[in-house]
Amino acid sequence: MNIKITLLVMLLITNIFASNFNPSKLTSKEIKTLKQIKKQGKKLGLSYTLMAIAIKESSIGKYLVNVDSKDYGLYQANIKTVLSRQKAKNTSWNRNKYAMKLISDFKFATKNAIAELVYWKKVHKNDWKKVWSSYNGGWKYNSKRARDYSRDIASIIRKLKKINV
Image (tube, rainbow, N blue to C red; front, side, top):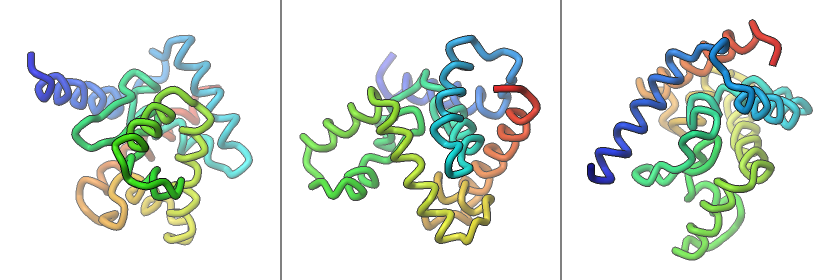
């Protein structure tokens, strides 16, 4: 199977997992990861959003690389955005360095996701539907894809709030 087909299958599985997210089927490792995420996001009121994004984007760490979109880590941060935030030059070395850091450093990946959410919260004056849309679509937050993403995040959050993670 070639790499593009493999990636497509992985993306479909991730989207199926997110849209059919069932909290009762979480493994103990996934619950542990969600609790870590919750703790990191608590101070800024981002716990549930971060947990939902980790579920939607990487199936809680199962899929940490999207070569096509150049998104990496638990929260699938876009490498160009990360480089810009880090004030790092867009070079092959820096792309690889920060991609690896997003994949291997939980705190770095989480701080990066928090920075992205805080930015969009400010832009959209705490309108969570738009914040979640922008996390996925940037300034194209009103696109169908970004709006669908926002609805998925809201649905996952509702499910998470019903359980004690």
